[in-house]
Length: 169
Image 1 (tube, rainbow, N blue to C red):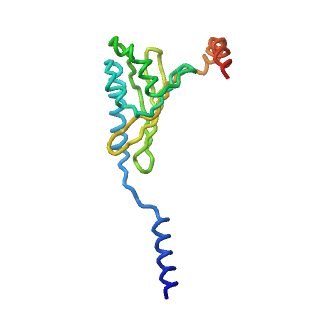
Image 2: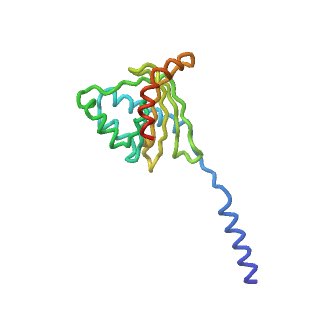
Image 3: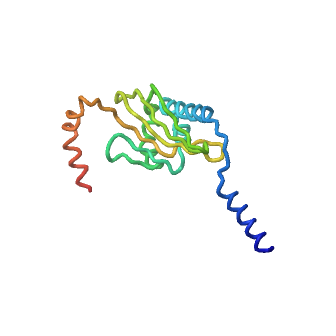
């Protein structure tokens, strides 16, 4: 009888552990929250509000810029950016469109956005994580878009700099 009871409890325990618990995730609300955060993040840069801008980034955030060597921790990116913010003129990115994708638990999102910038049309993409009730930017990548018909001219223009950069590897 004891073995039978242990077997039944074991089966019950295994069943409970292996069945997925249904999580109700309001993806529309999450997408709206993230959209508002990103709008305010870009706005903080346009207003040179250093604390507001960097406050939206996680302490372990990574920012990847448009140049090959531009891969910064939050601390490095803040140090690079501080003089621009201090002068009252950081950068002004206007979002043309944004797609936000939500994981099944609703605590992790990734996005892409099309931007108008001082460099022309750019693409931004990133990852955010929600800890407790707060979304933080974990990773952001800024890319300059290049029309396919112009790619050969761009390759030629950056050939010398690429060769110098690749000497490090």
